[in-house]
Amino acid sequence: MLLATVNGCHLDANLVGKAMKKIKLDGLCLLFLENIGNLICPAEFPLGAKARVVVISTTEGPWSVRKHPHMFLGAKIVVINKTDLAAAMEVSVDALAADVRKLKPDIQVIPTSCRTGAGIDDVAAALLVV
Amino acid sequence: MHEFSIASGIVETVLASAETHGVRKIVEVRMLVGELTCVAAEQLKFCFSAITKDTALEDAALEIDTSDAAVLCPHCNYEGPPKYWEGAQSAAFLPTLECPTCGRAAEPIAGHDCAIKSIKYVRDTDRADAELSTA
Picture 1: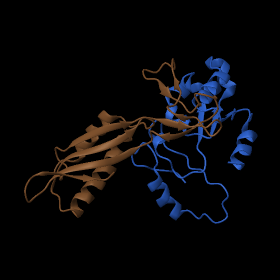
Picture 2 (picture 1 turned 45 degrees about the vertical axis):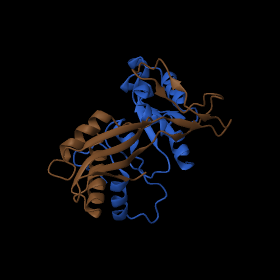
Picture 3 (picture 1 turned 120 degrees about the vertical axis):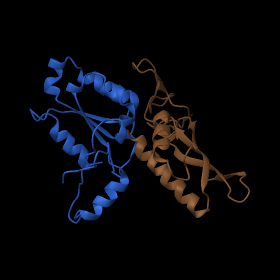
Picture 4 (picture 1 turned 135 degrees about the horizontal axis):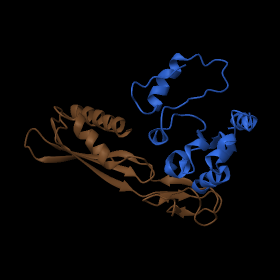
């Protein structure tokens, strides 16, 4: 389902609650709520999800984690995508992962590349045990 | 700009409370906002003033107090201020959830407040200030 917040910069639990009434939930074991927009506004609005998964990519540059600390403080899993472009971007995946763990040491960090498929199985496995 | 939706929530709540209590003029709303939230006080005040025109909240002051962050470590039972990340290229030190004593993951126990604490209003009968405490 495509989301429309009508210029709003994030989802909130109220919107999710309304949407849940319109979705047929029987038979679903996993429901993804993909939030809108940036890494600042949505940080302060828990949606009732069991786990927050934050996806960043190497093309966002080396400071993505420390520029948006609140979003990561509330995360259980952080996916660092586009690792195939890390060298071209001169971005260290290990340094990004270290930044995440500096904010909270028990966040699971999973490097992935959707282009090559690397790490995708790890994300699936992590989601099944949250 | 999530401050707009927070300001809308505050205004709706306060106006509903004013209506319940028969209050027509509110002079001050006092809030508590935690260090671990991403709520910018100046933006919140701007949004508040913009949406209160022609309501019982017009010209009311929005005062914002800040609550400090605190963490509890489930591993070593440390309880107190968080460890701050210095030198993160940030103008302010960033609070983290790394335990200051054992270095493992701690949980936040304070600093997430975003709450209306009190409302000052003018009573219709004697025009004296009164206070409604919601704490």
